[in-house]
Structures are given as C-alpha cells and as structure tokens.
Image (cartoon, rainbow, N blue to C red; front, side, top):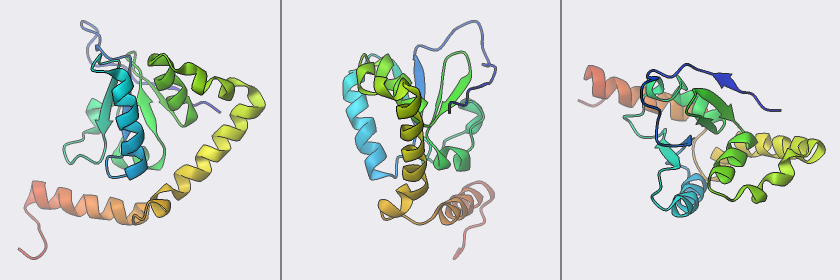
Length: 158
C-alpha cells in the first residue's frame, strides 16, 4: 500500500538538484549502513539528498513538514514536486534513481509487494529494539528535553 501525499514546495523558481530526498535515522546503525551504501552509489552526483532526522538541526518545515516522530516511525522521502512517500516505496524510488531499480522491482508485483510492505512494517516496529536502542517514546522524550535545553536554556542539572 503506497501513501503519497503532495506538499507544495516553497519555491517554484528553482527546482532542487536532487531527485529524491531520503530521511533517515542517523543513530540507527543499520540505517547508516544502508545510507553509506547508497551514498557510494550516488557517487557525489547529488541524485539523492540524504537527510539525518536525528541531527539536532533537523527541521520538519524544510522537509515536507515531516516531524521527527513521524520520520522515526517509518522511512520517508520527499520528491522535488513535494510528494511525500514512505515505506517500501521509498526504497523502490531511491534504488530506481540510482539505476538499481531491479533490486526492488519484484516488490511492484501485487502479492510480493503486499508481503514486502508487511515485512517492512514488522521491521519498522521492531528496529529500535533490534538495534539495541530505547523505545520511540523514550527517544522522543529525550529529544524534546534536549530541544528545550538548547532553545529555552532549561537544562537539567544546570
């Protein structure tokens, strides 16, 4: 099941140079490994813009309005026209953009695509535990505390 949501881009005068903007969790070791692989395939061409949602400077407004919590729940990507894609469709589009679409091509078939989508859902729900990280609620709370500390000067222990 593909969910495409179109968000208007802020500037129509100069389209972005990238073909797809991939939002990823830079604190997830498996995600970083995949991004490193894809980055090597991109080879500096700028086809894929890699955006680390774990970066404290990540701003949803600059990335289709996708907030940190939403991006942490499922992988998302943004197309130059403002369309937001998520789940297995992100991998299909990124791999296609990097001329490796054959890797995910089989997931376009209805039955296999449904199975792939379900497996991705399971993975997305379990990835934090499988990579030895706290649950999403804890990560969100920690990020909010850090944001408050940085922006409001409300640091614990200060």
